[in-house]
Amino acid sequence: MALTMTAIHEMLAPGAKALGYELVAVELGGGDTSVLSCYIDSENGIGVDDCAKASRQFSAILDVEDPISSRYLLEVSSPGLDRPLVTLEHFEQSIDKKIKVKLAMPIDGRKRFTGIVKSINKEEGNETVVLEVDEEEFELTVADMDKARLVPDYSVLPSID
Image (cartoon, rainbow, N blue to C red; front, side, top):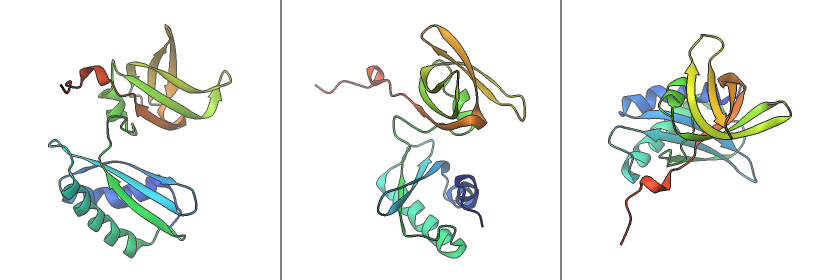
């Protein structure tokens, strides 16, 4: 099996769903030992016990399928406040919110964008996100995005006195 994050996501998503979680994203980070990061979420939020259950499930699937030939560590966590945006639904939930996008290939010499999601285009095969950056709008194709993350809005968090 070819090692792609899409293939690994498709392999693990049913296991997450069986436990009542959404597999939000998977990422493989480099370094001396690779880290396979899996982000899960649910309507009730994610706790340590949820991560442990999903980790056991994902480990079993990965042991059988063996999609990664080199050594790696499996890390399962909640997506956090700066959650990754992968699917068009993730972008739709982020309308009027600030996000960061890194493109695989530059547009007008630029690969990084930080701005407010204004709208999405669901045209199949050409799904795009309209992002307002410094009062200028950019239409970015989801398939061309290397990474996209929500920018946390700390002003909505309760204060700790």
